[in-house]
Length: 453
Image 1 (spheres, rainbow, N blue to C red):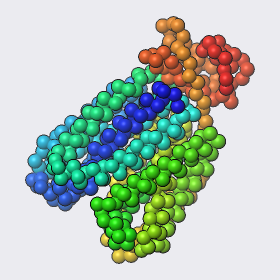
Image 2 (image 1 turned 30 degrees about the vertical axis):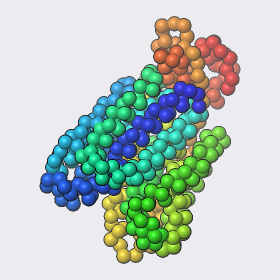
Image 3 (image 1 turned 120 degrees about the vertical axis):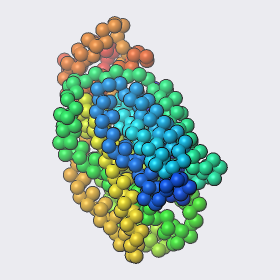
Image 4 (image 1 turned 180 degrees about the vertical axis):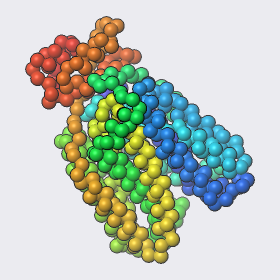
């Protein structure tokens, strides 16, 4: 990656991680610490935790539809501001109802898809998977850090102080956005009406398989993290306070697997093969835990296999989605995908709670393994994504940038031009297989350099 891509990837991954850190820190402590609020009941405590995901699932698609028509950065600022304001409202509340309102407002800043779409704007196609992998790893790390930090912080500043930390995270995330350059997108095909654009995205079979994949991935993850802690205590002899020392090494191991997988998937165009292999690994990981959950090292082996495969999938899915989605509807497709992710987490929480009530633990793991097997069968028909190439060019010495981009987009094979006026550069996203000798020469003249593709 070049310096601009590295800086933008760091900033946008930090925005994602800071939001997730603020969210995850509350989860392991709220069921206990939240009992001090006026009017608190188990049902209302659950609603206070879950309503964030519900707001996210409902508003991801509207935010993403707007992001395909307007500048993405102001929308991200609005979303982060809502996240920070919601945290402040929860921090100032003395009743459970105030916390619920604050959490709902925080969740209404549903800009996950917009952040991913902006990351795809400022990275070249060839570097996209690396950037998405870095973002996926930052989310995984925030998960581990949050579950370790949340209980400690609560003991120091209380539950209201934890909500103030959420507000601080949202404010820091807004500052990180200053590191990302301003971009202006130009498409070959103009965005359609909102409803038509959403229908187009929902009618694409491969996109729906990717939406199902993110749904299943987070359903299984959430169900597993509800189901497994008691087993780590009982069968592996690991106290709850030390569970982060199980997850952190697994995250580090997954780094050594995920990044080579991403490089192979992108460089050798093996994305489908890596994807299917990761789903198979999830099936095997769950099956191993079903067969050997009562043995410490078999349980950890199954958990490790699942965790590594999860992180590979977490990095691959956004990259594949950005390739498969129509360029003019990229944010919309990511919005649908993010909604599926949060719905998956919600369903996973419901299923995980039910599994805890089952007397036979093996049946619980077996049930999750069967769900993963059904997922594998559905996604096995996925087609290899379309691979575009990127070209970094300097902007011409003219003020008619719009006219220049229009001439570029008239060339068959040029799909999108992303202009960064502050840096005086543009990214051309193209299908080099559609270029012939004449269009190559025409493109060389327009960008004032010889093509090396």
